[in-house]
Structures are given as structure tokens and as C-alpha cells.
Image 1 (cartoon, rainbow, N blue to C red):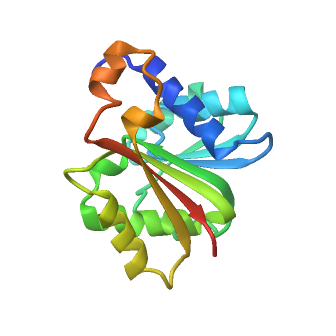
Image 2: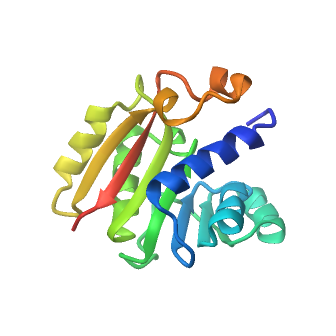
Length: 185
């Protein structure tokens, strides 16, 4: 993120948290939390508690000092140290696309397992020309014994309101889309 996009990112968090039904006291995992802005907004606006994971030590150090929530440096592809069923929600925006298609699949499976039954995950800023909606469905079908989920995909232009013209040019247009997972079993 070379430019300042805090307004667009705050829009994403508010839209997603509202759609997912964040409630006071719930526990949220932010995968690829960076400097912790999303958890800070979630804590301040929705009164949730959060854990942010990021692979970049400098971003985690910044978040630990200046952001709301708990943050740790970790390889997000390996979540076995987190108990299954712990979180009400998981969010990830603009981070999964750094992973290979295979790692996106196995990481999403692990992320879904960290949710309570009925818990929801948001994986945003996916590129349809790299990992498409059918790829996600195939992933969860192949690993159906690991976790049961409902999957919903929404194109970002339909999900986020067009109130920021500059941000819409870069973030909220095709081929970008978001995936929502609901753990069902």
C-alpha cells in the first residue's frame, strides 16, 4: 500500500463488520493485520476484541505499540497453535493474494476451523483471474472432512458503496471480489 488508503480500508471494515454482525465482546481474528488499523476500527466502532496476525515484524511492532487489540508475528499459513472454534469472526483484506493458490486453500481451511460453529470469515480483495470462485468451492469440497462451510462470493463493486471515487478506481472494481465463509460444522 504505497498510498494513503485509510478511508477506503475503514469503509471495508465497517461494511464487512456490519454484514457479518459484529457484536460487543465477540472475538475477531485479523489475518494479515499489518499495522492493526482494521482491529482498531473494529474495537472502537463495534466493541469487539481482536487478535491480529502478520508475517511482517515491523508492522506487528507498530501495531503492538499504537493499535487496539493484540498482535503477533506469525506465519499465517500455520495456524495449528490457535485452538479450533475460538473466534466469532475472521477477517483478511488484501493479504491472501500474497499466497499461492494452494496456500490460499489450505490457509482458508485452517481459518475456517478457528471459527465457532456459525462463525463467519471474510477474505477480501481476491482477484478472479488468479483464484476464482470455483477454485474456492473446489478447495472446500476437497477438504470437506476438515471443516464444513457455506461459501458466498460477492464482487467488490457490489459490496462496497461508490462514495470514494479514487478508491473505487483501485480497490472496488472487477476482477476483485470477496469471499464470505460461515462455519456450519
